[in-house]
Structure formats: C-alpha cells, structure tokens
Image 1 (tube, rainbow, N blue to C red):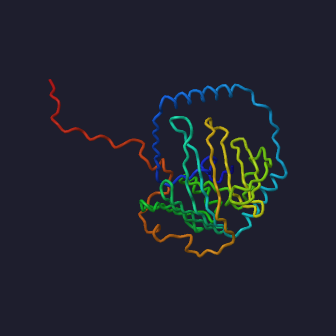
Image 2 (cartoon, one colour):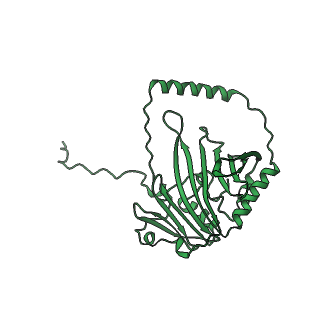
Image 3 (cartoon, rainbow, N blue to C red):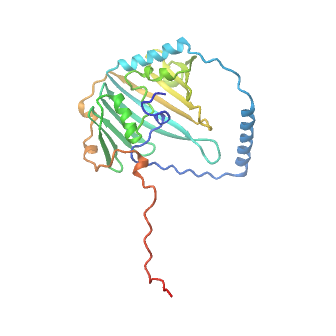
Length: 297
C-alpha cells in the first residue's frame, strides 16, 4: 500500500524488459455458458442491494501486531526468505485463472539486494550492490544495468520509475514497513489465530485503505509475515493477489559476491527502460511490391 513499488504492481512480478505473453483459450460448452449467465444475473442483483454501513476502526491489537512485525523486519541486518506470489487473471469463461511466481530473496541493509526468480514464466534475476542495479534474463542471456541510489528504499523507487520494476514484497523490505502503510490505513482489526498457514501459529489481521483490502498472517512467536492476501477495491472483477512467505532467516552473513553475478555482468546489454517503451508501436513497414509501373494515358 506504499508508493515504493507502485500501487498495483507491488504484488505482481513484472519480468524486466521482457514481455511475458500469456495466451489463454478456453472452449466454452453450453453448460458452462448457462452457468456463467446465471452467475452474471446473480451478481447484478447483489449490486442492487444496499451495503450496510460499517464503522471503520483501527483496533489497537491489530496495530500492535503490525508494528511488531515491522520492528522485527527493520531490526534485522540481513534477511533471507522465499516469496511465492499468486495472482488471478480473468478467463473467457468468467472464473479467474491463477498465475504463480516464486522469488528467492536475500538483502543486506542498507544497500544490497538479490532476487532470483526461476519461474513460472520467464526466469529473472535482479542484483543491487549499492551502486548499480542489474536485471538479468538468464535464458535469453540479456542484462540491463543502471546506476542506483545508495539505499534499498530509494533503489526500489528508482527501478520502478525507470523500468516499472517492482516486487510483491517491496513493503516488507523497506527500512520501516509500518511507516510505509500507516498513512493509507483506514481500517485494521484482529481476526484470530491460524495453526495451518506457514506451518506455525499465526495471528490474522485485516487492513484496508481507500484502494485495497488485505488479510495478513503474522507469526505469533517470531512476528514474521507468513501470508498476505489482497483485493483492490477499484477492480470490478475483485481479482485476488496473494504472497506466501517461507524459509525466513535473519542476520545471516553474506559475502559481497552474493549480490553480484559474473555471468549477468558479461551478458549483452539492453536498455534499462519500461518494457512498453522498448516495443515498437507498429510493425515494420511493408515492402513495396516489385513490378512494372502502372501505365498512364
């Protein structure tokens, strides 16, 4: 919910400088079409009903849990974790399809970050060493390199500005995660405990702003996030975004070369720019047909 990586893009990986085209074709039979029609009529009738008034409150227990998680993350000199981001996309039948991307993350405050994304989708690697940021596509063997600010927070903002690069865990790795979401909070309340998510006991908190509503599972003992599930309020399809966190390690020691890649550094370079700006707006001009000129009278 902060501006570190944009509003919507933070919860979805955009492989830098490479366009991932997901072609979805579903054959709809008569039964499926009938069910879709019934669902559409039901949705319209529900919209006509007036929603009951709900008091927006910031419950202290929910705020305390959010702050405890923020303090734990901010205090760690280094972080290592795995993030699996799942987001829904609409299908031709109506019910959404799921796309999933995994990222293995290590960082060292204040100026080092590495993200390895093996798939699904295109493989993608990102390196930041306090001076430069580098986005590498190992399959295509292409790399983009740009000068970077001296802090992780400033680098994330610059990467998004230059090339629409953003990560679904951007809020969690900022210098002060709670400070990033606090101005936008309109509602926060405690739901209860779960003994399933993340294989441990978690405290469940719901938070909302004018733009999004999220449910967060936070470790009861270690205060580390285990899952975040989010819906954007301006999305007419109410598609859901989810990030699961695992393999947490705090204050682990990393060597300097952990945030660099010799293979990426030696790859052919392309511009560090927004993917849409790298694509031609139109295809190549058609070649003129060879032949005799038309006769004139």
